[in-house]
Image (cartoon, rainbow, N blue to C red; front, top):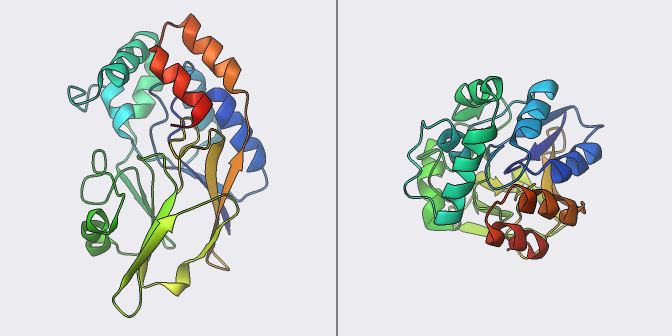
Length: 242
């Protein structure tokens, strides 16, 4: 089975559409959360996820918009974007966000936004962060998002650890490792210095994950964000992928 793995759409419809167009021939797309936040099209992005019936876990921005998560620890711009989203989101889309589970666990992999220890808040950026999730994994593969930076962290079969940032086209053979956590990067707000939308594919037969990038109309998104009076730093960073 060929999966598309996406995360951190962040109300960026242009990026989402560009990615979904590239994934139209996969068997299943799985979404790792943060459908909303930051960007100008929360309703359209939630509706696309609903229309396609994508298996989706909750992200911290999703649950902040529903008020199920306290957003007081968000930075000023993120908080302003959450408040704007709360004003414009339709009730049926809000209800959809409320129903999102924290973890998806299938026969082939687990999926969570942040980590298995703290699904909404913990970032996995290094081996120390990964250790609690390794202990909670019931499969040898777990997909995460949240940091908007693609990488993998793995426990080798000899007990040592490995990992590094992932670049476009890079492949990871899951069965080379005892356990592996893969961050698929961000669709709607990349933060690894590459402004192109980021996503992954996973072939459950070959057990190979591949990272992909696709260009989208960044300026169109920026124009809509300015019209909505969203914070300028959120607008600017899309151009640079930071």
